[in-house]
Length: 431
Ligand code: NAD
Image 1 (cartoon, rainbow, N blue to C red):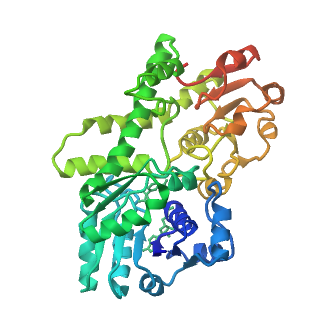
Image 2 (cartoon, rainbow, N blue to C red):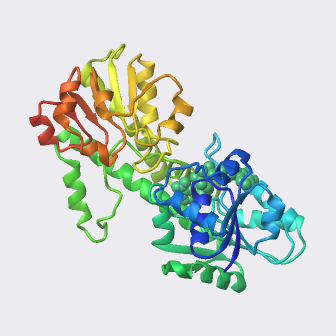
Image 3 (cartoon, protein in one colour):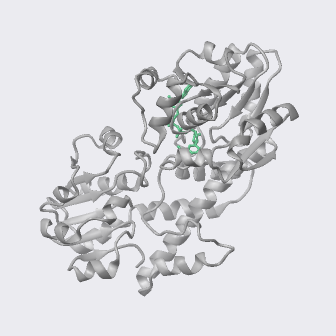
């Protein structure tokens, strides 16, 4: 059993702390957000993640997991400290390390013996050295720094944490390497031990590569639209090449969003620039993604005409992807802004992302729970997130309820032949 503190209980920190507790460790989750901690202590969980609530409650009950804002107690009582705070992008694309630095300082000020400090946040190359310096300025004793980037996906975070494809451990000492390899032994996964900078780069390289695949297939989709080909078949044909693989990120749509890909592509562009490396592929990945996020508007206008003033438009899906309530950088928000700028009347539906979306959209749109109700009198239905429940809807009922049978499907969730047979005007992506 290890005594662990996780600093920052957001998407990554909350899953990390809960899963390590579930694996039999004694874990403290610490945050500076008093309300978040009060809520966690009352059993109110700040994010939606399948299976997470039950695991939190179970481990709180058996005293493996607690939440606090008391940094002194949390640091002093633990041998292993994870930093899992946010690393948002700054206006120029560089990474804001303010939270990481603050966490490092508060660790340094409260050290009371040998501890391993692990960076789980996605951080630019060299941040391991920075954290070491900051802690060293505040504490004279022995400690080790490890980089252990996280690869969990929102929506399947608990599963991913428990069954990772690989675990990356970048560290500077044999002692720390052994302790952290043992900590991760229960996950029974491939562990890659390397140096800190390589570990930091593996995270950026992985996310930027996945984002590149998405922009690549979206550009292929745009060609498909011009020549009358079907991108889903192109993608299928590509994936059977074992060098590309069945799990390749080759689903055309309206672009990537979320808190990681946009930020990490920007971050790697910055890292390349700082080191005098030309990485122009990534500029193209970003440009393509922005254009893709804006690509639904002309499709909607081709069905409803240029002027959208007063048109009733329903949007299914706010989250940047299914099974999460995260709306950060979600393509839905760009479409909604474009439509509001043109005075359309918007109704939105999302199974779980309504509350976070309300913080951004306020009362500029109507929120609806029921799919059928949401399309009553609608001129057009837009699919912005591929939630499974949208795929299984009774389209005949939907058509009856709508004013005009127009669907613009940004996620290719419907069978294009079937939906046209039902009499819809239907535009999807690259098909
Ligand atoms: P988040 O914004 O959901 O949570 C960050 C938390 O840190 C917040 O609760 C905040 O209050 C807290 N915090 C900030 N400063 C603090 C401090 N000094 N002390 C204590 N708490 C502090 O962030 P997230 O999505 O969990 O991401 C965290 C890191 O993990 C980022 O670097 C991100 O890039 C990386 N990451 C995220 C994901 C993901 O899917 N969200 C996946 C892999 C890696």
